Image 1: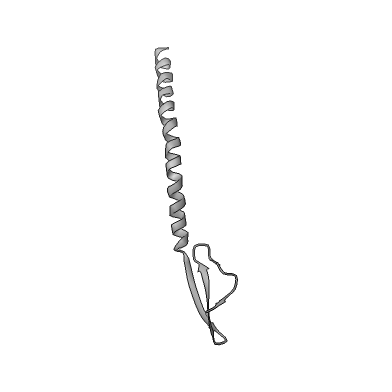
Image 2: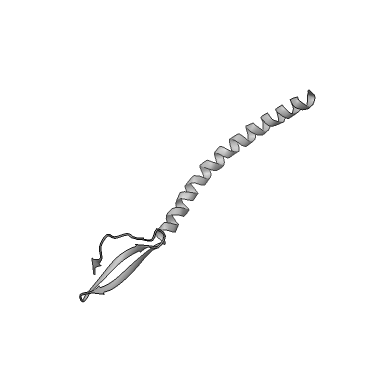
Length: 76
């Protein structure tokens, strides 16, 4: 009976301390994750150029998502 009581007290103490720390860690990690993700995505855009009917044109390519950022070629 004494072991069960000690076990329950120990579990209660762990729950109090561990429960509070998890909330604080999650709040502090979220902003850093969003900033890091934004920086990574910003570096993934590459400008492609071409000459079409004598006119120089450019278009942006998102190498992270593998799709065009601009819907059409833009004249320079």
